[in-house]
Amino acid sequence: MEKNVLHYFVDTNSSRGFVSFWESNFGKLEKVVKLDGYPDLLVTQLVSQACAQALGCEQEVELVHNCLDNTSLQGIILPGQKTGLLNLPAYGDESYSLRLAEDENLSKARERVQRAYGCFGQALKIHDDWERIFISSMDFEAMDELAEETAEKLFGGQKTDRAGSCADRFFGAATVNGSYDYIPNITQEIPKRYFLKGRPGTGKSTFLKMLARAAQDRGYRTEAYHCAFDPNSLDMIAVRELGLCVFDSTAPHEYFPDRDSDEIIDIYKAAVQPGTDEKYEKEIAGYSAGYKAKVREATGYLGEAKLAYHQYQKSVLESVNPDRRIGSMDWIIGKLFGR
Image 1 (cartoon, rainbow, N blue to C red):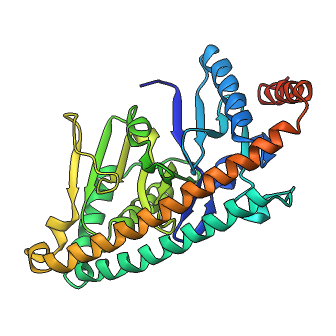
Image 2 (image 1 turned 90 degrees about the vertical axis):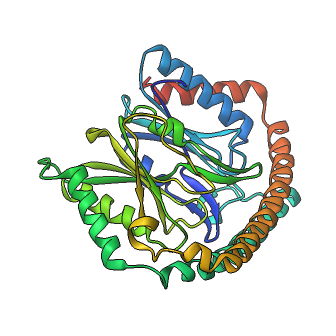
């Protein structure tokens, strides 16, 4: 696994529509090249070129992936240069797009992602019903006590003399190829990893939010990775200064310890009435099946959106003079590296 390169997403196609945290990640950089609806092929070439140049100088690189397909790149941050590049997709929230071309394929892509959002929204309602099973069986005092004990264990009396900060982003995305995440990459250089286990509604996101606040209150820079399906929820926090992270390690991003230093934090065991899984086995199976069916339907619409968006981008590429394209790419690379 490559070193000096961090992979993540800043956008998501979710149950709450198109959500972007680009400002949280790019807003504090000294220079940002912000593109608007550039074809993915060009952006991937551009970012790959910038990445290779930065790695050749042994600089750190953060690669921002395209949440629709994950196979293309959407942006790059060069922390050492305090510069970045981000391409805002033309199919997303129209407030991000400066040139809204009247194009049949672009309109179809937008319509299909809206259908996907509708399916994700229905899946969220099913998930809410699923959560109620475990909420009714929760010992919330025990969960709060576990969170306080964990915060003390992680941070104790440690504190910096700085104001805390937070970068909001996503470690995964619901892509046209299904759920995908970069947890192994994000955590590869973090010595201490805590695997958070539980069930829907057992407070994993609340637990992580409490830890994120505790880290920021102590002056640490926190990476807060939100749930790609429901951006209002958290799935991971990472505090690199302290060499630790805590993440929701349940489906669709289920992982298990494979290092001696890894630990499991089991909310189900600590705060849920024993036998809940068995008592509501039939209901849980029904909610799980219904949820997965709606997610599959949404994924199908994302696939149709991708095809239409590809055709739109193809027409844009054909309209651009190759010499002008090369000149623009060279100019952008120069901006990223302070030339």
